[in-house]
Length: 280
Ligand SMILES: [Fe+2]
Image (cartoon, rainbow, N blue to C red; front, side, top):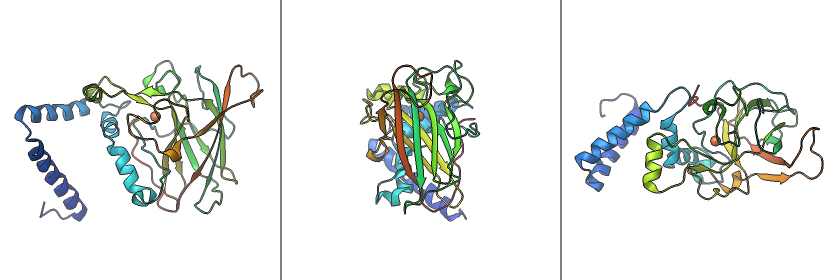
C-alpha cells in the first residue's frame, strides 16, 4: 500500500489487510475454512439483487452496521445517539405524502397507528421543511418489495415538517419480523443458534440542507425482542411510547384497537447527504 497516493485509502486498506492476516494467524485458519469463507463471501454477492441486499444484512447481523453508526454519531459514543442503522430496505423516491395522510396503500392487517413527530435542533428550536422518509414492514412480517400481496410503496412515505417542525401521519402498528434467512446470513444465524427476529419498528430518514442527515428507527415498547434484536439496533433512546387509544379513533371508520405514537427527533448541524439505497 505504500505507493497508494490516496492517504485514506492507504490507511484503511493497510489496516484491513493487517487485521485479516492477524485473524488468520489467531484462529490458525485451515485451507478448508478459507475455502468456506470465500464461498460465503461469494454467496453474499450472489444473493444480492435489486430487491435484496445480503451484504447490508450480513453487516447488520454481525453488529458491524451498528458499530459504524455509533462511531459516526453521538460524538463517537461520548453522548447518547439518536441514530440507528439504515438496514437493507430503504428505497429512494417513496411517495410524497401530505401531513395527516396515510402510508397504508393496500389492504394491511394490524391496529391503526397515528404518529405525531416533531423535529428540533439541539436547542429545541423547531426545524421546518425537513424531508422525513418513513418505511416499515407490514405486520405480516414483510416489506412491500418482498411481498407481491402489497401495493408498490405500501407503508412508505415522505413527509415535510411544518413551521413548528411537526409531521403527522397514519399507518399500522408495526410488528416484529424475521430478517430473510434463505441466504448465507440465515446459515450463519442457524449455526449460532440465534433467532432471526427484529423487534417491531418504524424507520425514519430526516433530511434538511445544513443538518446532518438523521437515519434512525423507533421501536415498539412492548416487543419481546427488544433485548435480542438480530441486528443490534435498539438503544433505550429509540424505544417509542406507543399508547393505546381510548374511545373513538381520530378518524372515523376504525374498528378495534388503535395506537398513538409521539416521538421527537433532534438534528445536529452538519452535512446533509443521502446514503446509497441498498435496494431499488
Ligand atoms: Fe426494518
